[in-house]
Length: 496
Image 1 (tube, one colour):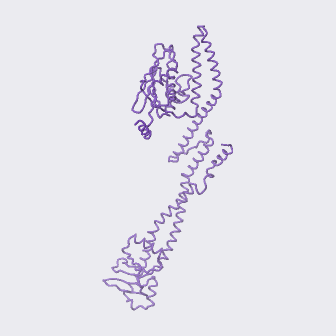
Image 2 (cartoon, rainbow, N blue to C red; image 1 turned 90 degrees about the vertical axis):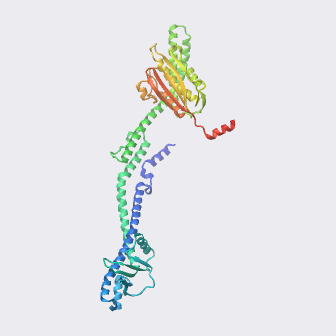
Image 3 (cartoon, one colour; image 1 turned 180 degrees about the vertical axis):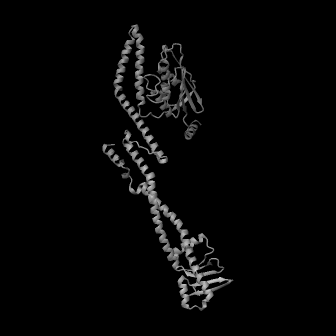
């Protein structure tokens, strides 16, 4: 990526508000959703509310008609003029008023008898569902219908009846609906604003701060000032801020260690060529010194050779660990005893060192592994054991290195056991940490780190089973590869 492209990426990620449009921000979505949810609740409340309004309006008209009916019954409505009857009905908007009592029905006032009645409403026996259905029907398709409304009023034993058009009712319901809609909209806006302001202060702003911190940290992960400063909150946001701060701190530390390792690998790669030339010259000189018959030279030559071998091993170990990635294991069935013999030959244990090597693997024992990587695993473990025992100065001590193996179902287990002094406490605490898990002075700790990486690539585990004076045991556990059903069927067909 060019410098210009990097600059564009940094510019795009510099401000989170610039990368997210206004309509896609969490705050805008929260405001809209809150308003919509409040309106939905208001709609659910509106339907039974308008139904109650309709029943109340009709109940009010029926009550007025009942009050007039008492007067009309006492005064005899037949004596009223036509004009008075029209005025009475016009006052309540009805076409006719009737009363039923003592088993008789009496028409008190009437202006005109409608040819038909579209809906009969019993105010004393109307369920909530029927009331809501009737209210919606009046709002949607009412205005020119004739209603028959009847029921008792108060404690009277008389039943009153009205014939009334629904035009006025519908107009009153529309006015009520308009007022409720305006009030609902106002409530939705106020509620959404309050909820938005509260959640914005409690959640959105801290989340925006964490987002900005992550973007700033991604640009300069080596700057301690880019690590978020968490608030002392006890809720989930506070936990997230503290976890983010801890993660950024650990990541910064890890990146620093990796940078040191990268610098070390670069430095080693630069001096590797010169180092090999120096070591090659030193080996030639040591070979010539070995041909000198001087007893003093003969006594020093083996030590010189071991020192040169140690220097070569150190350089190769650092280079091997500095590889960016190990290739995946090319696994196949191997005879483990032969691999252990190759490791023994490579170690070049001198008879005068006093170290005894025992290959206790059964000749028929097979393991499913990459031969080269398994060889490196065992070489690192065995070399560490030999170096630990070779450092012992007690002549009577038994120095024995043994390699054994056993099979537990589909899992192979290799045990590397030595009778050395055991691992010190510091080495056990940083057992598989490069440059920190060295068991001897001047070591790098790369052998165990490399071995663990290779074992994990096989899906296995490298563990320290025991470490004390006189016994150190490492366990290498490698499971067999799972057999694919198609491959197994193909093999059966080929051998069938």
